[in-house]
Amino acid sequence: MAGIDYLQAMIDGEIPPPPMISLMDLDLVSVSPGTATFTCQPDESHYNPIGAVHGGYVCTVLDSAAGCAVHTTLPAGVGYTSLEIKVSYLRAVRGTTGPLTAVGTVTKPGSRVAFAEAVVTDSDGRVVATATSTLLVFPIAT
Image (tube, rainbow, N blue to C red; front, side, top):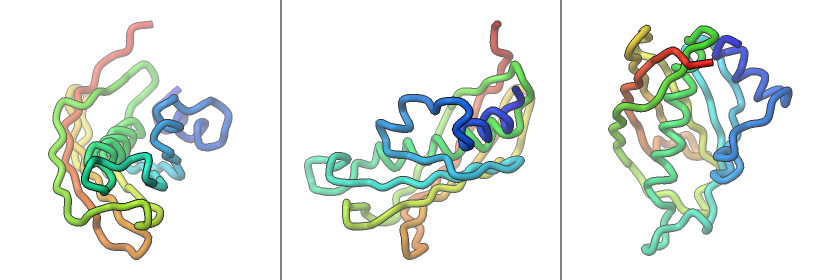
């Protein structure tokens, strides 16, 4: 399947999501060419020792949004993996922050390397974190 068709089938419940989705309490809610949107509900199980949601949780949400945005641009038989991600954390996230929304957008598609960005906002629309990502694009062995 083309990447966008695969992701839409996941949203529609036709194929199961990867286990990471359940672990992170993420929901892939929409895709279109070059974009992917996730929602998630962080809680105290995602806390670090100082009583805030661990930055790695937010980074994973950003990485998922950026990666799936690139996935929407790929034909069948082509995969991707993150080469680099740069995250800027702008405000703390706690269990009381409410749901988060992450939107990934492709800034430059490619047949070998693709570039994307992602933004996470809280339930009030405030930006929590941003990321830029470089992703390796490659044929998947069958």
